[in-house]
Length: 239
Image (cartoon, rainbow, N blue to C red; front, side):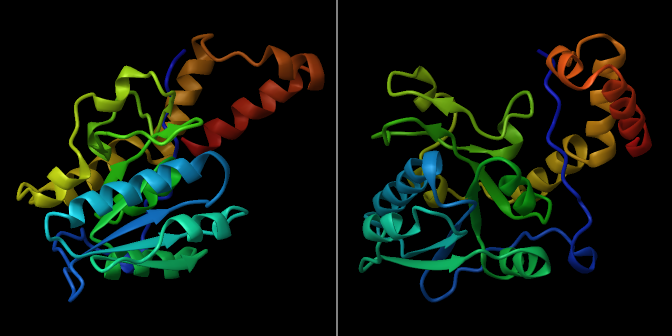
């Protein structure tokens, strides 16, 4: 298979510049989850919370803000709660300019998967990827910055016996304790601009189609060959 990057609109609120500084309010740094709160994502959010609790044991006060809504929100609220060192806040769904302002003004580190990760990184928010964990919450896990991913991956599906849990990367505790954050904002933003713009994704998709690497035999069988012609014309209009 040929990887094609997920596109995102890189036009941002007021042409905002890259967010570089840490906010570090009176409650320490703010870590955000952005995304749906249901189904397979619950274990990922619980893992983030566990890692935040571990980092707090080193004396770090941390705010954990959950931005998103979903069918398992009440379940999550039972498991992810405020402690003396970790303040938990649930924001519900936030979209559009309000989301961009929230990320710029209140988020030190965004942890997300899929297009949610791109929404923060395009603003220069320091963005860590998290994977999907089917049926378990790992005891140990290494995070990667968005720009460290491979083949445009924005999160993988992992199983309990998967050796990828502790591949190259760092624990959240190590990341928070470290001082090598200087260029992370710039690297996250540059990664999105180099790999996930709409014209670039359309161009790569069109190349795959032209080279016979993109087949839609099932769609052709169901809706006819004219669908492919319309699809190709649509993609060409984006390039």
